[in-house]
Image 1 (cartoon, each protein chain N blue to C red):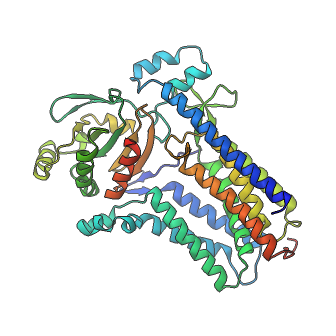
Image 2: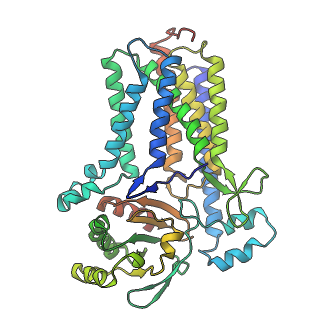
Image 3: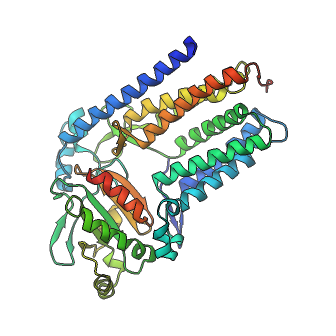
Length: 244
Length: 202
C-alpha cells in the first residue's frame, strides 16, 4: 500500500495519486465499454476527456475567484494550485460538459450516468486497494498499528469492502435493473455507505453542521442517486439493458 | 413519491443525522484532548496500558490531515525559541519556504497581509529551510519586502524531514488541539489563504 502523496522524481514532482486515478478511470471505462455498451460511444474516451478537463479547471481555478492575484504576479500562473472551492467549480464544469456531450451524441442521460457510476465504482475499489487511508484510533483487533503502538481504523479497507459488495450486488442485478437504476442504486448505497464509514475517518475540518467537505460530498452523491431514481422512474420506465 | 422512494429518503436522512451526531460527539472528544505534546511526552504515554480514551487523546504525529502535527522547536530570526506546542490556545499556520523559491515569494505578500489581519488569532510560523537557503540573501529579501511575520530557522532540516517536505512551498493549517486540518502543496492564492484564515480563526 502507498501514501497518496506526490513523490520526487529527479527535479520533478509526480502527483502519483492523480496519475493512478487517471489510469483507473481509463481502465474502468474500458471495462464499462464492454459491460454497458452504447453504439458509437467510447466511455473511456469520454470519461478520460472529462477527467482531463476537471484537472485543468481545478489547477487554474484560483484564477476564477482571485484573478487579481495573477494579474499582479503573472508568473504565479505557473505555480498556482487548486483549492477545495476549485474542486467544486471543476466538478460543476465537468458535469456540464458530460451532460452536453451526452446530448450531442444522443445518449440518454440515464445510460451516461450508469456508465459514470460503474466507472467510479471500479476506480474507487482500485484506489482503496492501492492507497491507504488511516482513520481514528481504535482498540478493535483489526485496527492497523501505524506508530507508537497506536491502532487506527483501516478506512481504505472498509471502503474497498463496501465498494466490492456494491460491485457484487450490481453484477447480480445488472440484467434486472432498468436504464438509470445502476446510477440510482450505486449512488444511494455508495453515498450512504461512505458517509457511515466516514465516521471512522479523520476529517477534522468541519465546514457545516459538524460534517466535513468530503462527508457533504457523500450526502450529495446519495441525494443525486435518490433524485435520479425519481426522475428516471418517470421518464425512462422500461428502457432496460441487454444482457452482457 | 412511492413508498420505496420514501424509505430511501428516510435512510439517507438517518445516515446524515447519524454522521452529524457522530461529528458533534467527536468535537467534544477533541475539546477534551490536551494540546500538542512534545515527543518525549508521547513516548512516555505509549508505554501505558491501552484504552480507548487514552489512545484517543494520545494520537499519532504525522504530516497529514487529521493527524497530530509533528512537534518542533526552532529559533526565530530574532533569536527567540518557538515551540509548536506553546500555541496559546490558538490555531497555527505553518508555511515552509525558502528565499530562492519563486512560488514561495509569490505567496509571501498575501501571507503578510493575512498576518496583519489575523496575526492576533492565528500563530504564523514561517519555517525557512535555512539548511538549503542563504541566510544573508534571505534576510535581505525579507527586509527589502518589509515582511514582519515571524520567521523560524530550520537550520538542520529537521522540520523538512519530519513534515516529509518534497517540494516548497507547503502549508499546514493546525487547529488549537495540534491537529492538521489542512495541507496545501504548492502556492496558495490570496483567496485561498484568506479562506483558510477564516476557517482557522472562527
